[in-house]
Every structure is written in structure tokens, then in C-alpha cells.
Amino acid sequence: MILDIRTKRVYEPPDARDGFRVLVDRIWQRGMAKKQVRTDLWLRDVAPSTALRKWFAHDPSKWEEFKKRYFAELDKNPESVHVLLEAAAKGTLTLLFSARDAEHNQAIALKEYLLSKARKQAS
Image (cartoon, rainbow, N blue to C red; front, side):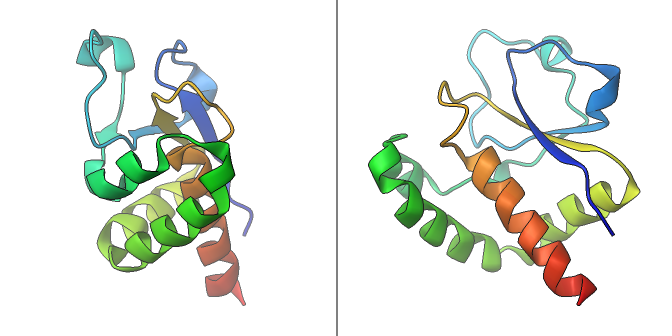
């Protein structure tokens, strides 16, 4: 099964092609009303821990270590991971994030993690 998992900044306008929209930040975005975000689910438990988020500080030189630590946290949170995999199995899943860096953030790492889990389950 091929999953359609996308990532998108929460500040970008919603699109019908987004499918099921999940906010994966631990903290709600300042200045954004829930009506603006149009999220189907806010799954803050799947976000990196505060300690990990602060350590990473969106420093690209820490990216690989961040992913390793974040994946370890996700391994300890199978319920939230299951919710996301189930949603992705039903159709397009868009992971919403607020970070300025569109290449080094938890949504990008989470997408990689989910696709890896799905491949392992399929084999």
C-alpha cells in the first residue's frame, strides 16, 4: 500500500487536496484561530518532547541526531502513531507544522517515520 502523506506549514491556506489535516505541534500557533487552521485533529502527543524540541532548535547540523531521538520517542507512543497510520490508510494525510524551516522539522521527520513503519508492516 502506498500512503499519501504530505507536510504543510500551518500558515498556508487549506486545500481540498490536503485530505485529513493533523496539527503535529505541541504548542498552538500564536495569532492563529482554530477556524484559520482548519485542522481535523490536533495530535500534540506526537510532537517531540519540549526538551528535544529545545535541544534541536531547528539547527540543520543536528538533524540526523534529532530524527534518531524523535523516532525513539515515537516508538514509545504507539497509540498516536497508530492514529496517523490509520488516517493515512484511508486517504491523503497532511501533517501541519509551524516551523519556518520546511526541510528540518518534526512533520518531515514524522512523515519519514510513518512511511518506514508502513513499509515494515507491509512486509
